[in-house]
Image (tube, rainbow, N blue to C red; front, side):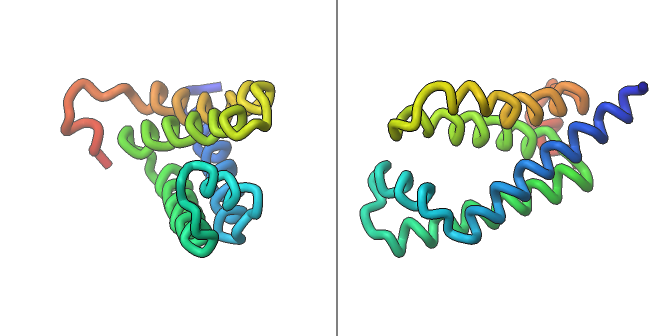
Length: 127
């Protein structure tokens, strides 16, 4: 199996994760709205609107990564997935839920290394 095959497997996996989570966010998943409120957005309408925007960004990132991944989007996806995994223990769900989501941030990180870690600021945004 060549590197291109592994790259495509990772692209599809990252896109699937971000499309799935993005559509759940667009749908206004109640738990996630409550978590946003726990982080200081008291107004439930504003929390739902913020979650909608996050969902749209997730789906957009998924499509970009599927079509043509570039390092800045992959790093952003890695950091975002790490944060959203870390949110679980911070809101009281438990550390095992964080551990279980290691693939959510590890997959875009692995893809970033397959695509190539940039050596300059300009390379982060090569498309």
